[in-house]
Length: 450
Ligand code: ADP
Image 1 (cartoon, rainbow, N blue to C red):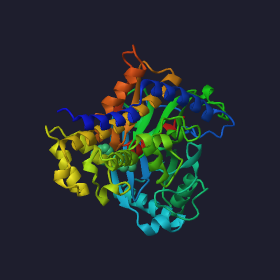
Image 2 (image 1 turned 180 degrees about the horizontal axis):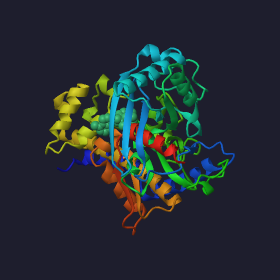
Image 3 (image 1 turned 90 degrees about the vertical axis):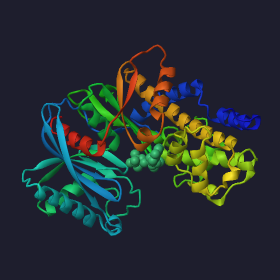
Image 4 (image 1 turned 90 degrees about the horizontal axis):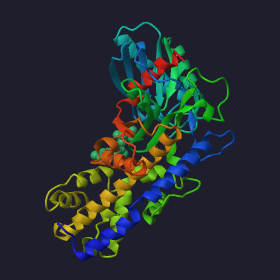
């Protein structure tokens, strides 16, 4: 179907704002590389933190034994046991536990005691009596000081347990184990991006990068220690270390990205205004809202829904990224699934949702999500170029946006091909699952050998 002239005009205006041209992408590659160097420098104050993870080797498959992971980052936490056979094979089992509001907002001691007791129950139910190393995925901002110590900068996501901010969470967990007489050794504190990369490395020797595309976005990669002026102390045997970029904040200072008025409005209404601007262009928490704001503007100027909007459609965050996925999957001739969704979710009258409207809405979703994929791809090209791995590099990816959004992977790959013409093997985006469980337990295994 071809849109009417008026609809084509509306679509063209969105295309020009959300096109993410190759020049824009090249600009991102260059400034991302610059900011990476800045974050690795000695005295930096850079927006992008480039945190040294202290993970210095990748798994080879020869790792053997039993390792634990503890995944804390939301209202559930999980304990996982990973058994490695020394030939690259592994098996895992895990249990989930619910954290009550009381535990999340009470004292740190009672929170860590509860976690320790849960681990104790997990070990007892499996008759495990030996001391096992544990990888702790702690999905809050941590200033990592060594592989198994790091201070909580601040709680997020509704946690307020007292006496934990500014403290070493590795020590707090070890102390809780000691109080209960539980034989577990906190071998590593693991960022989920690093876990994602490491989990994939077991069957992929060229996996140099980890990427999260979920509610938020972040990347890590394997760097040469000689390229890290802020490194202190002796170099690791491998001469390498994984850097957790915290790339969501990459543009916060310079603000060179082509922000649209919708990006600005969305940012202004967010709880962290002016922060994580790069993340806000590419991750699941924000794409729906940007699309909604584009649609509201078109409706207000009479170019969509004949100028009518429901109060539900005007609600901040009402349009979810998952709905964009649904709309982009709609391959009915008259986009009736899109019409039904708009009616069901926002109470828009069916007779107000013309075919033109459906085409405009679908195109908005395509443009906003394609911009996200292209910008993320430019960031990955910057990382691969910095470490001279553009010819053969696996990027391990986790997160619902990557896994569920139609064509997201294809759009990432297409943008990489545009940025790296003539290179045939290039950069491969591969799914990595359970970085915060399997990946974290593997990091605990690696921590024993480095
Ligand atoms: P998290 O990043 O919070 O650890 P996920 O990787 O599961 O967890 O990402 C959840 C995010 O994915 C949600 O916040 C939402 O923005 C996005 N999302 C959920 N469902 C879909 C979907 N069907 N298609 C695209 N994105 C989705």
